[in-house]
Length: 362
Length: 205
Image (cartoon, rainbow over all chains, first blue to last red; front, top):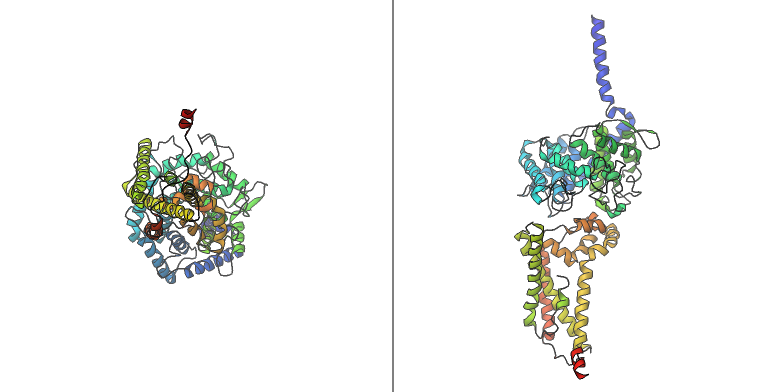
């Protein structure tokens, strides 16, 4: 009887280990410890950048990303961090506007509101519920749909831009969907269905994209029929937006086995590189890519993949090694080869890198 | 709006006629806005239209004063009245256009400058009258599809100037330019020979 009980206990323990093996335990333990040290150093840098008013550079976006980085530390956050987090939150909440947006400026409201909502949700404090609910309403209102005179046949339909009324893009939409998911928006809310209309049209997959520009490699483009000039324009699939597109599909509830998800995952793994923003040959948006890549690989849930050369890759080990290598002595990260999208600002590149490492360590 | 100085009346004789010159482009712009509204079925909010009209007025006021000044200076330098007028109008219009299109053609300069001083893109943006109109109407010019697709400025860290700062700056510039323009406010009569028209030529033949 005792032997039998022991055998059952052992089996249960083994099963539990098996579940854990699917996550961060597939990492090299020494690398895991170094990654945690990198997170701690990055957080120390970020906390040192907090201004008197609780903000990071007076920006809701940067403050929110820093707050999220502190709160999502897999090692937990102690009493010492509480004051820092409270000041971040106080600054963010002070920038909540009557229209529901959370932004210190008159543009980029959608982006700022979304990252602020995600950070406040990570605090798990009911006192932010009203600000979050208003933020959700702001995002819902500014999604391109019938209220702006658009119909599902229009290729802007379901998308979201930086500030709401401007042209939509997959990057801003992914940030908004991430916020909606983090703040537990009803999965039956029309936002998701409308978003999928836009997401499908950003994928170079003619079977699910009804637009004439649709290619067939499974990757994503930035906005209907065009990419930013920094990536050569046109409608060529590239890394950052393919990661953003795949996250958007998964967060919108599309199953992992869906051909759209499979096609995007195949593109991302076939074109895998950490040296550049995949398929652009440039380092513009490289830290954005690291951040989105960590999130999407975590959401997809496979510890390994096979790249375009048939080589097995452990994404956690490789991304952690790369980020640790790029970290500066003061704990920060900076894109030293591109100033676009603020990546030359250590406050942004560090927050993104820390959050990426936190996904690796989950 | 940016072409308005080209329609600077060639026979204006005093600063007192300035309000008429200022009013007509604003009315034209307001009519165009109404037509846009009708064509697209989307209302332009009054909260955006009023500051945009005020800013347009300020831009034109300063531009016209610059035309008066330039014309006066050229006349003092010996140019005949007609030539001075044409040169002044075309020069100020060109400057206005170059400054307005700054966010487009200064994109690479802003990118390089941002590596030395983070405020460079914002400073360059603040020199563009088009950006001023965008601020007044609450429109994110740099993130609009065309601009975002043609210049890197929208991807840099850029702060738009504040509307109040712009209005104060335009008002200040207007006062200074008006004081400088007073001596040139009354134009000398155009004494340049008038070329005979085709009709007159035909009558002669």
